[in-house]
Length: 282
Image (spheres, one colour):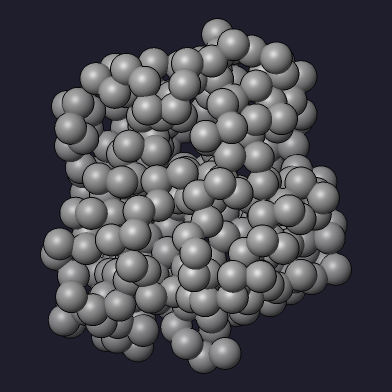
């Protein structure tokens, strides 16, 4: 979905001068990866396309939701209410699943894929990133990371059950850069995420590999050997470091980038393995 855009990222970000991680905290929409950062995010958001609520027509347990960030930006997304298998009525949730998509995907494009989690008793959340789809604000890495620190903290204050996260591609970058010890997820998947952004001109402090927690025993990392967007070599250092800290690793020859698998059967295999890990079936 974002292969050409990701290659553009490599071309224009290399060598860009950047403010240090954590500087100018009051301006979350400050570029940290150089002057080209806004252009790259604009290209990604164009690749994502436009929101279309009709994609969720007939999903009776889908709710339109919003989240207001500390700098006043309104993020829009959806929640799938926990129902239980085949049920039409809401039920008390077992916990939540937060889905963090790639940088060329909108919430309404993939929400249906996560109905099985609602049927298993979990509330499912997915937001459009800041500046994407229906969410306000400027598309900036530092701001998006801050947004997810707030979102996760807010979810953890509401739910006393299990905390599940599935983060793919760019979503894995955001999740790890936002990761803080008090988040304490029960199960967490990083799918097809590169080890570093510093190769493209961002400060090393934004490299996901630098934000792995000491204990990764509740993590799974997925590597697709058919992935042309984030080839296995781009994630290898982080995956090996996480595995040494207890993470599970799922490396599959047929997998490509998330939601870019070559056929439906491979995609379904991937989603089944993800569900099996997150729900504790494997």
